[in-house]
Image 1: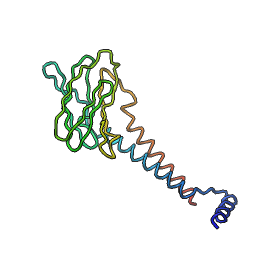
Image 2: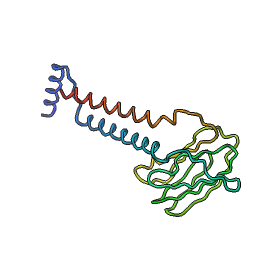
Image 3: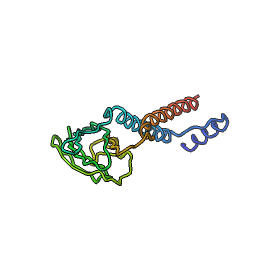
Image 4: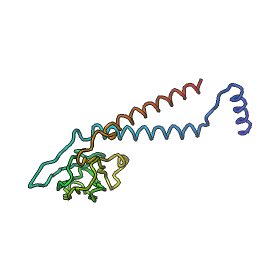
Length: 189
């Protein structure tokens, strides 16, 4: 019975010149686009709103100190600036649940217990290439965990694409979403 209906749909499709997407394929495509769209929006919002400007810390006895607040799903401040050779002290506190604070290039990986300040001191290597490095949550903290990131600018990072990536990704996703709607409407006719 089902195969007869499929054959009839194929015949109608061939006669009318239209192709029909199966219900399962349409669901998979829709879920993929919604997931991608939501992820890009979350990344863009976190990058654009999450931390305001660039934080250069406070110099105390030759050590550059940063007080960082971690909560679902962002750091405050989200962008830090240091120079090669600086001694840096991170004082990080989770405001809600277990989080992590990690910067791979500096060998930093702190587990953060709610409302308990963690302090870690590190010297920025002189031979570390100037650039923008990622600080991220290293302990799973919920659905927004992959987007809980910040940046540490070491030396002179220049403009780079990283500054414009949130804007570009939002525009690309909006274009894909619009194209999906237009294609879906044309197929429905």
